[in-house]
Length: 330
Image (cartoon, rainbow, N blue to C red; front, top):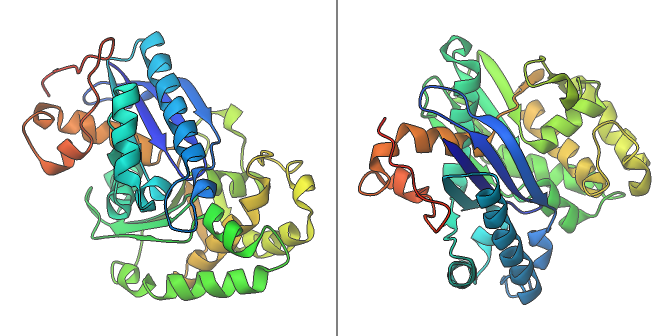
């Protein structure tokens, strides 16, 4: 079946169309995305601005149309940090459903961490042993660890690259940013290290992939199966280098887009802090993350989406004309 996963993040709204089947890996077929930077549309009272909500709803509508045009049978929409934390989250979701027919599902930080961990487990398999998985998003840092498909610990802390850039700026305040990142991570890292030692440590998400490219990892054009690694030693030099590099020049670095150039320094600061405090020398960079976790969870629980488990209901797809929920039994 062809499924559309609509990931509404703090920086980017991204629809990834995948060909998926029970027992097989989801294969990307098409992509539709826009950098809405929803986190920048949060007002002083904690609500999402009308401008931000308008942009989001317009993107959801175009994503639904794109999903229909590319032959999707189901649309799996979910929201993470920015909208999740907005005080008018429920109102925006209700408006979106009325105007687009798409009901957005809110993923908690813990569920986001769990789904990302599941992706890494499925990618590396049981032979990877005990995994430590780290994901830096726009609004939050997810950490999960364990030896099963369900992590023994799954945490989310407010250390996203976009959030820190808004709070500390894109350069010149690195010392304070580092101190804040380490203090925040230090408050939870003990819970993670109780699961250690890790047989494999994994970094997922665009931020880690970007940092890997700056450090010399293979580009995406070489395919998902090329091993990519990010070393902590490289991050130490990278933080200082990025701090000295004007934002407008960062986009010339490998893997850094113009849109992500302002916040790549914050991403490097968080990555360095979490690796150092967790005692990790290197991370394997996984091409799968939360979107793939949503897909495999949907396939795993296909029989339960209309009348079953809470985890399945949380990711129940949006049926609509042209997007009919496939009732394929597992």
